[in-house]
Image (cartoon, rainbow, N blue to C red; front, top):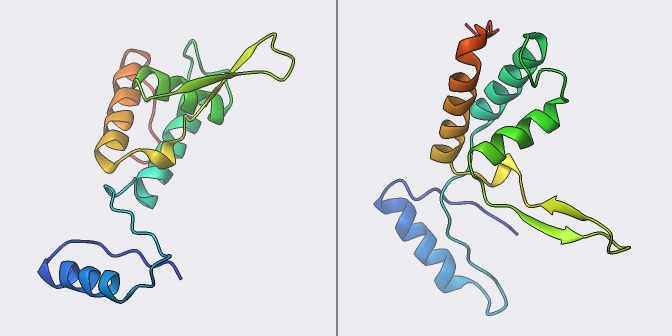
Length: 125
């Protein structure tokens, strides 16, 4: 069983401690920052669709490619691995789902800053 516990107060911390003390020896505990919200994710996809409709140098790219372009500009960590034939490389590890809420907010601000000179019309406004 997997159960997220949001440590937003003392009672949640005590509950987490209780679950840890009662857990069998072969279980795993992971503590991490909260990642992006569904609202942030929906906003990102709306913004990327708006960028596709606008006239910018990158508007011809797919939603997924636009997302990767902005992740790279955000300087999100990425790695590359060799192709099977050893003649090329491909990037791995760039996913918005791994960003913290603060990093995701930075990504959204980066898109706003990029789009400002092109006067992109945002659909959520």
